[in-house]
Image 1 (cartoon, rainbow, N blue to C red):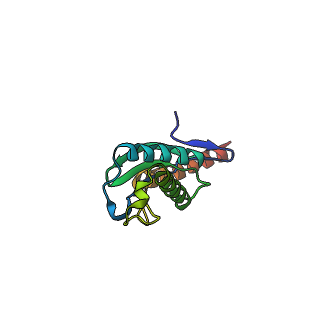
Image 2 (image 1 turned 180 degrees about the horizontal axis):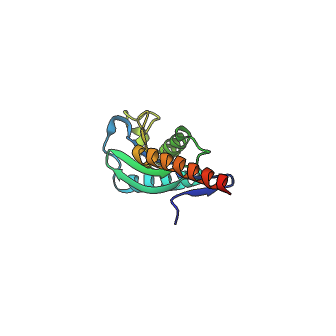
Image 3 (image 1 turned 90 degrees about the vertical axis):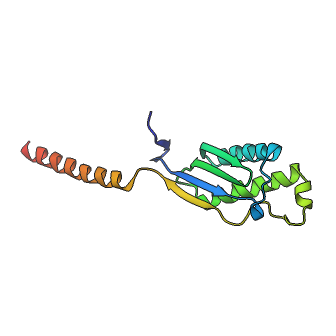
Length: 144
């Protein structure tokens, strides 16, 4: 099985490691709240065509390894996931909104993102190998 996904005109493997935290890094992602965060991430990321590779909700932060199609930007994915999840949490758990430190924001501003993929050395080696293969093919074509 290939690690690549397919769309109409592209094959792709765009994988990202994402980390974000609740406002003030409060340790509230436990029990039903954590489960609701997991459910929301699954629903909203799948609506954007993304596929969850790994998801881990800790009491004070979320780790997500996500395959994102090239037509979606990471900032849009994070905006949708964080925004919709916050709205859902405030609706399902209204006492979270009542706390004076939340205001209308559940998540802290920003997030951490890192690309996950082949090592740069492996890619350089592959590109050089492809160049040698191309030169061999040209030589074979000239002999014919």
